[in-house]
Length: 278
Ligand SMILES: NC(=O)c1ccc[n+]([C@@H]2O[C@H](COP(=O)([O-])OP(=O)(O)OC[C@H]3O[C@@H](n4cnc5c(N)ncnc54)[C@H](OP(=O)(O)O)[C@@H]3O)[C@@H](O)[C@H]2O)c1
Image (cartoon, rainbow, N blue to C red):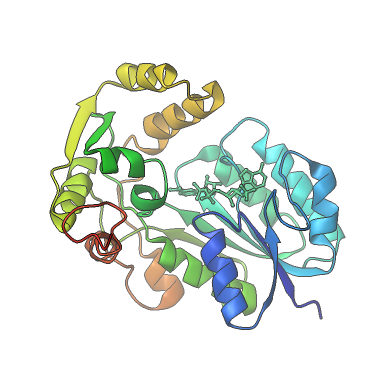
């Protein structure tokens, strides 16, 4: 039986944690990254074969998002190559409320591999390891005022399920819709973070047009701007506001709360403020 697991996005928010946990528990891990010894690049299919050689299971996170044009064709081709290379188990990180991501899920379910699908809401960790971090540090977070409340999920919960799915049959052919315990508005999220680290952090509601114009002014690449505007206009239009019991169903315990995430993260000093270590 093949015992090495390929972790795609292994330097990112979920993949890094999945790879660390697997390694700690003694599982042999192949890092999926453009800069790994055996590189993996979604945009260079020639890298897929070497990365898949000898692999038994894979954690699949697509970049930049399953909703971008061409993503379905790319992941379908990857699934086929993985199954052809003898991979038996594929665990896919998917996005909630994105019709294109749901098409990618179906493509995985149509393969002969064993699968688990983690259809996740927005991550708590976007506030500390991704696009909201810099504005929070700067003390001003401009965001479209139209954004709906989101039941942010903690990546620690997601990673726990991914690792279990990669190392056992417990989540075989299961699709989990993963959210936190309840929806939080963006102003509330920023307020909780500000209070936890003892800083004044202003939430500044702007129009979608002004938000786009600011990204253009900052010379953010057009494809990235289009993706962000799609996510803000579609994924955060209210369709995903209801919380689910996916974490409870998968782990037999409630999801971690947003306030717990804020407490844990504030003391690391990443947001600065009174509780910062440095
Ligand atoms: N963030 C969220 O709230 C959220 C919610 C639900 C679903 N998702 C989905 O989760 C996936 C990951 O998103 P994320 O925001 O959490 O990002 P992330 O995993 O933190 O993103 C960075 C990772 O992507 C890798 N990467 C970047 N470009 C790549 C390429 N061309 N080929 C191979 N690897 C590449 C990077 O590896 P190297 O730079 O080392 O190559 C790095 O490991 C996406 O499909 C996203 O739609 C995200």
